[in-house]
Image (cartoon, rainbow, N blue to C red; front, side, top):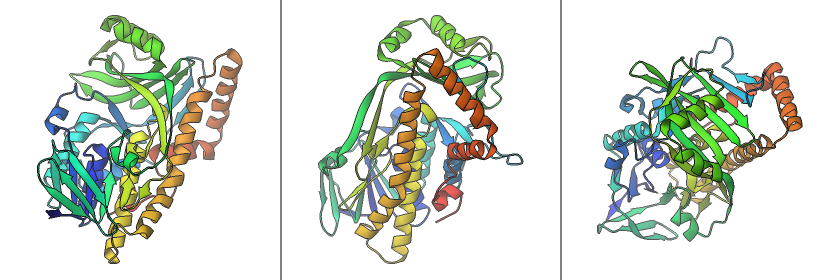
Length: 406
């Protein structure tokens, strides 16, 4: 039997980030996940990219992740929003004199490899990959997890970082509001003639938003990732196109402003859905990341919400440990619930509302949207506030998201 401070079910991006945050402050964690991490090294495992907000990037520095990143990531210097290819739109940029990017683009597989390397180098993290939890017992005074390799883990707290279909959340009877969008996201990476200059684009079409995200150059060619939300029926058609024909469709959706494009990676398609847990704690249990919430990718904030969960929960637990409290104590879990509840709900509702607002077809709704974008761009404080939201620097930030140790 092995005892640790926290047992984390799920060793993906958020689970590993939480373990690193705890380790950097002297708390131990055991990660359990049935996945073979060697499969992460292939781009075919997950060809997606993620926009890591500047506050999440500060956390990377604070928990000692930066040295393990094999790619530095591409800084996002500006975010531009447009309603189709019509003139006008809105640009978000850091305030004058502030050189910190709005965020950084990373390939998910590089993030996974860096977080795994950070965990393997840690003294207080034990990894149980290719392992299933046979049973979980959340008793009044402890949590006991029995693994299929014969090991038994005990801890005062269990964390579910299992993803959208978290079995632990279901076993706890936590209700979830959820629905599916009639859309799928097509993701790929493009090479293009002209440099992107660190600009991320969100171009809204009635059929769904087209996101163009800057990446580091490869082989001397500028690259960008695309996340193209289309109806499910259209997704099948787009996936059946040849690489050349799909690249031509993407080039047309971009208005040709980056010149000729070509595909660099195979296309993948992911269904889009929304879910939000009614609560994110239970007896000796806390939910983080997609176990607690999953949102539309329209603003690229899904992964950052998970990192904010990890930063807040780590701070609650570390400060509780310093006071000599039981890490599964109800008052600690209540503090985490209060801290994260409003933020996740507001972001979830905002992204859902945006996806519906920009999906209304017709010339009049489009004209109204363009007018709203133009007005927003002229109101400095409002524009700066939205830029700060993109950076993840608003609200009651955990210390790690400020780049400070706990």
